Image 1 (cartoon, helix red, strand yellow):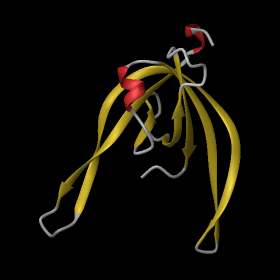
Image 2: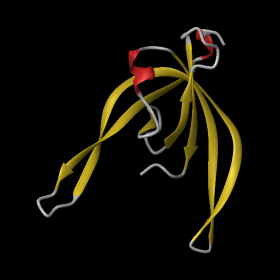
Image 3: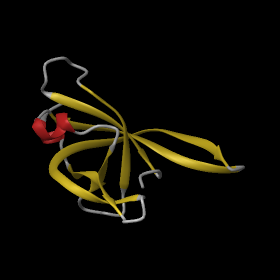
Image 4: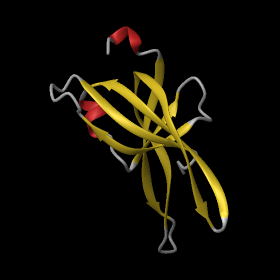
Length: 113
């Protein structure tokens, strides 16, 4: 992968939990930062939830390794900067080549909330 392959722009967000005063926690998503990325669809999947078929789309997200990209994980989410309606949950993140130049994130669209 070359840096000129990074044609997408994404934002990483983390949920900030706040007490609502009644013993419950609710939270808004807080931006951690933005970076260039290479986003490719991988495979589709369907699960059955409450007797209904739910479609989920999988994506691979390649980003250059940095303090930001190494700090995000499955509790965070990814947002497309150009189209903020596109939101993904992070399912897995890792350094596949072992030289800390690239980070691969496996994402799932249609389930980030």
